[in-house]
Length: 304
Image (cartoon, rainbow, N blue to C red; front, side):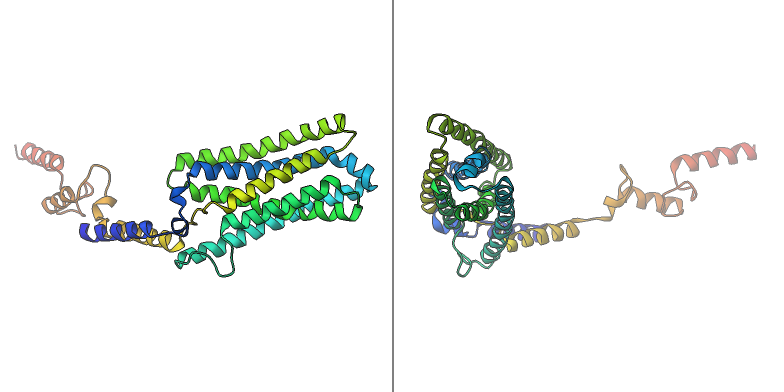
């Protein structure tokens, strides 16, 4: 039994030590903290875009002559597009995870995760640049709505890639996810201040906040495109690990594990053999030492 368990453990260890796509790309040469910092900056940009929309609506109304209802519809379209971007990332992550299970470096016709995020950030940068200076109502509605797709894609990507990056350390994994989410809140807090300052000091304009976000998105996209991506969790490895664990449990299971606490198989067998009762479990068979002693005392008293 122990030899079979050792063989299963060796198989699982070999699967876990097998090269992953990120290893081939050289992730070990790039500090996980640096990669996490890039995810934090991406989340700060997403939060900044969300925070900048609200204080800018009055300026959008004045420069494009869109009604409050039309602006509200554009914001709603942005949130729906964000949902689509989230679903798009889920589909993309499933494809690259399945590809990693087959041992391929990337799925066919698929960008690696950081390259895909860089494309999303470049799209966000273009959206922020247009929002900052456009006076066209149609252009504003389209860009506000379309900017939700890269927002949803990169938002979900940051969380999942952080989990993949720190999966070997559960404590740091939880801390990294918390920090990444904190940066989203920080971005949503800072950009309304920038919008308020530009409205007050720069003749009621909002372009500085959006152009700052555009510059930050370009820098983050460039940095992500130069860093290797963390490897997805291999489905085959997880399945093999589960199978090995089940085999080990079934091979090591003994009937003694089903007995009451403190009672061994040897004790049950000896008790059953001496007492001739029902498996030695109860006093019905008279097999326990106390029961035999009481019967002897009773026979002696009656005989006397």
